[in-house]
Length: 552
Image (cartoon, rainbow, N blue to C red; front, side):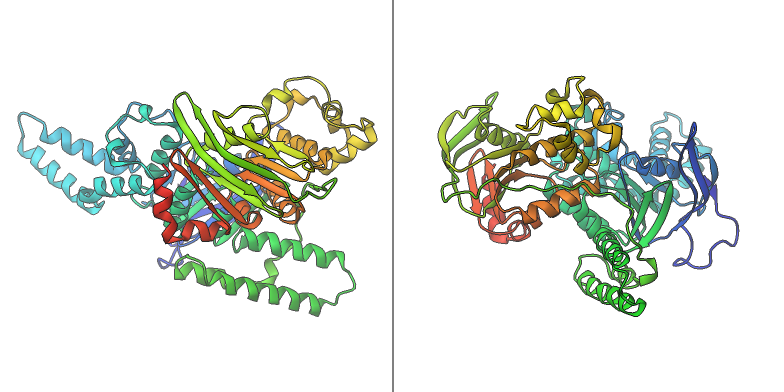
């Protein structure tokens, strides 16, 4: 990475934190993207989106210097610090948790070690004294005296209890390791922060904390994420990687999605005059900007979101799967009755005394700090496992479709996709099955692809096709957005909002829960909370926070 040439910036608000010029990356004959020219400036957060395999993570690795670009240059302001969220969760296994965080600021960590080495010398010379004085000055400039308290504060904010701050990283659970590495990336408020899927494996409360932290982060942030609520909460711009091009748009993900869809509809409606189209786009921007003003972002970022203009709005080239769930019959009045259900695994109580009645039009999200609790519940309700205690009864009119957390075993076969889907269908004709696979973006010869070579996202799309064939009136969904790209998540989300049946689901996707579910049931070893309210109201209700703590 090169420093910017002398005179390339004029004031703190204008200078370029990261400048990308004529960038290209090519692997063999495949050109991932080319002729990329972008500036990333302080005070902004850039959400990087694109289909699976488009090159989002590669782009971040090029910016960080981990991957070498084929052509072009990347420049930074001299002396600026870049921090990257580490993806190797075992890299710091032999370090204490707090030390791991401190190592995120490599220069400060080096100064701290040099100081310690000097002061531990048995014979302290005059030269050592001068050196120590220089180090102390550097240490103070980097706010070193507050380093440990800042690191501890980040860890606590991310849900790492104080008693864990001095244990080795290897002794933490996987999800806690992720939190420590995230604290490491955030430590010292770097000038440029690169985050690749930072919300993966985080619980919803921690994601909410991170949203608040990054919303008020006043340096440059680039983030790859499939979490739309997260992108909406923190982003001032969207970087779209599509068909070998990288384009920059003002606004958050929702603005990019809704405006591109509006532009696409306008393009398809040729009879509208140019003046009418411009007016429609301007009205859309006005409505969006009014909503953006209510966000929790800093004033400077809100101002950025107010600078949206119609010239940047373009029709989307994205392909969205055609997910359609059509119940074969309307559910009757009796849907599901659960009474005093309980389940433990290896001596750990997941839930007990779970009782609820599912009503017509209920779309329920189940929450728990232990994700195994929801999976265990769904497996019991689907008849794949037994409860330790209690009973449940499904109504006679109910036909269920289930998307489990684990489904890899269903794909351990070398049969084609049409033959795979035929296993779950009464109509096994290729024409019929091709229709469902086509809706899931498997076109042409792709329908003859072997089931055992599919990617994670392709497997989920096949599982969704399997659910569509069922014509079910009740959906059981265990983390349905796992492995899906943003286009599939958006299409899935839109369909479930309109679904005329009942839904029981768990999810880490805030937007998914908020827009689909009208009822929240939180379960734990000490009981349950059952509220007929949306997710935002539930997590922000001060009266419920204490009750929620008592569940665990």
